[in-house]
Length: 92
Image (cartoon, rainbow, N blue to C red; front, side, top):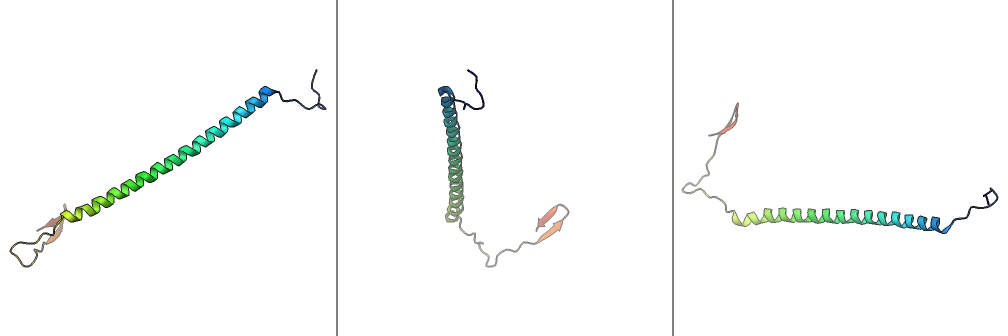
């Protein structure tokens, strides 16, 4: 029997099954891509928070150790003179 324009084409079971499998495969790949992008965004945010917290710790941890240097024996601080030379600045 040949198909004519007046008779609708019948879809057999294997065509329907392969279409469903293809649809689920595309949906699965799409879901995996979205999950991977979300995971990458979360990891980037965590790395940024860790870097910021490390920078804050380094900035404020140094303040406790540093003590101001006081000149010994002199009441006035020493003044340095700087002049520009062809090689850069020279301090005398």
